[in-house]
Image 1 (tube, one colour):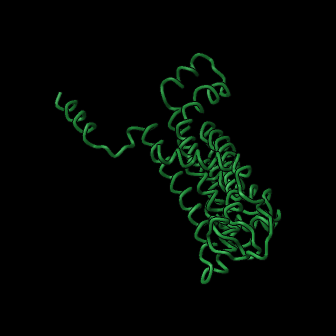
Image 2 (image 1 turned 60 degrees about the vertical axis):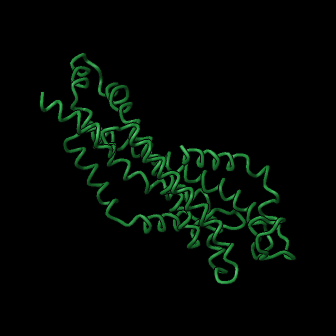
Image 3 (image 1 turned 60 degrees about the horizontal axis):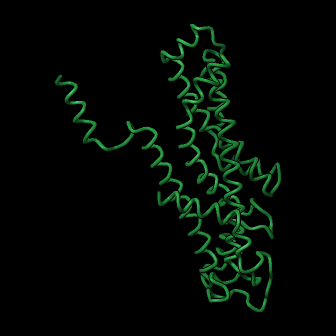
Amino acid sequence: MASLGVIALLFIVALFGNAAAPYPFDLQNTAESLSPPSRAHWMGTDELGRDLFSRLIYGTRVSMSVSLLTALSALVLGTLYGAISGYVGGKIDNLMMRGVDVVYALPDLLLIILITVVIGRGIVGVFLALSLVGWITVARLIRGEVLRLKELSYIEAARSMGASHARILLRHVLPNTVGVLIVTLTFRIPSAILAESTLSFIGLGLTPPAASWGTLANEGWKALKFYPHLIIFPSLAIFITMLAFNFLGDGLRDALDPGHSDAPGPIRRTEVKRVGA
């Protein structure tokens, strides 16, 4: 619940933070360049005199929007691909998954860099690059779930009643993967945040004057020795956000799939009673 509160706060900052920011994110004041944290500038300023707190708020909007849209698009693509592959089965499933295995064997960062170079820098390029890579894991996961679900008795009953394959897949199979999809989404978002930050950090992400947490960390890295505040605050934002999403994903996984929980006491006592009976 604490992680959920942190994530809700981040979304509120992303939506309405610019209205509360003390300065425009691109306002330059060279007279106050590289100032340490103070009352006027809570997180200090960068080399151009721009307020770091205001730029961090703007970076929250960029990083959260890119990561959320990337995770949702990867979830949709991976779900459709994995569901069709798992439900059809046979040679089609084998062919589709061999293609996934080929892409999965390639390093994610290398593919993202290649796609970004071809498409170009900017929010659109980063979004497309992360989306085209992130759906692979989702497709493998959903395929496994569909393979398990389509063998259950209620699916056989639907077939015997003459339900079409599309109806079975859309009405009976996919709705039962919602829990898995929600948990997957909570893990895909921090992965997308880290990937976008990595691209921006190495100079393949957003172009100035746009700012994300990765671009702010990249700017702070250059002055790490003498002005550490430039990298500390963006790095803390990335760290806290990823930690919150991972804790939320663990909590949702335990809530939606109690059998996965590591609480052995009551479960094992129940199993012993059943065996004894």
